Length: 165
Image (cartoon, rainbow, N blue to C red):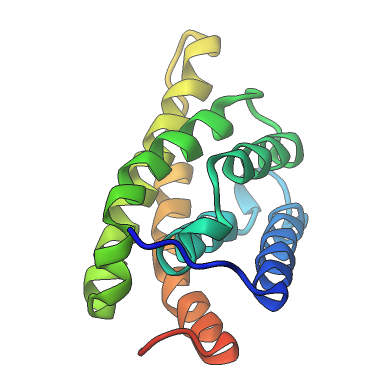
């Protein structure tokens, strides 16, 4: 894959979008059964930058973002880091071809990426409790995250003028 140097604007955009996605994940939307299901915007942001500017989302940045997400979201410390890191290992080899592909292919790849991350995180959060966490809430969050990728990606591509839509 050909490496492009990142402009100051791109680095700033990556930092701002990652920070905003972490801030959105920390918003309280109720508690218990009446809580609203919120998409995992961090997955959308990490996948978007891995595909469109892979040099802007190195492994160290993914580890840091996973740690921050774990600290904000609660759960088992390290589960989100490992899930995000393993999910990114599946995307990284295909990033260049995904950047050139049609949006439907990128969205399908995002669905696979999100499924891997959500499954690993669900499994790692279930192990310390010696029982499985209910799958309804993580599955619902997976669905709203997959649906949220479309507007997030389109907004980033329009505002940042990245490639074709």
